[in-house]
Image 1: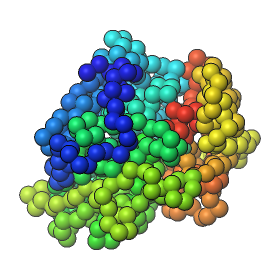
Image 2 (image 1 turned 30 degrees about the vertical axis):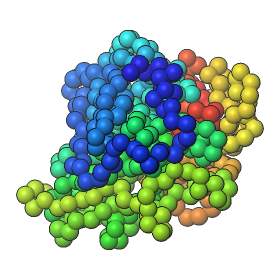
Image 3 (image 1 turned 180 degrees about the vertical axis):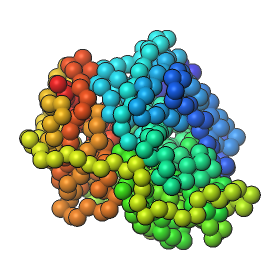
Length: 485
Ligand SMILES: [Cu+2]
């Protein structure tokens, strides 16, 4: 398959966006072992290679699915980088349309950021250097081409990235990768009757964001993780285009959140439900010492402009309350439980030091009312649709600002490139303990306020972006760009 614009459409050529259940030639069976992505360790000067490619993935039984990935068939390796070092990569592209590698959550210069101004063109190889200076965190990377981000991520051009910080080395958290420290990339997808991924946002499914009716974790449908009978750290990334998850365990057990988008929390926060919107990450620690198998579930996603429109969105098979399975955990007593208790405080957690803001900016996210560069209606921010030729804002390096973000119609996950921010308020309610940590996505509930500061620069040639992380909204123009000088 050629990965052209046309073949994307060909691959998504089903005439409706809901899959044909009757007559499908495949089975979507759950319970396969959780795939553990390979690690690409870029510490100590190791140069990594990351090449966008097409592949075939055995996601369904009886058919293989055409997908895309970075140096593998679907998704990419888990990249590890170390604070204080410069990570080096060769970025390639064997697909016949431009892709990029945006480093979501990294505090790096605009020309390292991998946004829409930094494509990797077909057959091109680019040397990338990332100056790592931020606390330990669970970040991710994905393609970020203007108008194409939704399709690229849907087909698989995304992966997780972990920043290791020597200051957090003795955090006391589970940290044996693949055993008691598991990456979980959670995504919803739609498969056509031929087993191909279907991506065809239009009408309501573009307006509300494109959602799927099958849940994948690390590329496998509702898999099963084998875990030791102790504490296990789950690094959860909502890598979906639009779906908001409300995670919880089937037996209602509590768990501890220990990290958010931008790093570890100063102390574990106990909870039994966790909401993650597209682009957000959370690190949680779950106690499996009782030896019981348990399912991770999520609830209905009713994020829609008007009541009732939710019914028009694809959704997984669920119970009467809209609750559906994400994945399962089975305790394997053959695995050694290395961590049995959590510390009361977490070493290496960042301490926000924003100080008083020197200025305020306001961002109004509009689902209507923007104009596309070539004319025509689009989504917008402050009445302006994303235009690659227009710098919307200019910030000053090192100066703290207060940003007020307001959204219309529905909740929008607002993401800012190049830094992490601190939430001050959201929807007029008190922040919960996990929201005190550093963030780079805020699910704007009516109106949110954040404190933000940029310690790196971005010029006109490679500006930073702010945008809605519902990828169909971003692709429709709900994005702007800014410099930091
Ligand atoms: Cu949005």
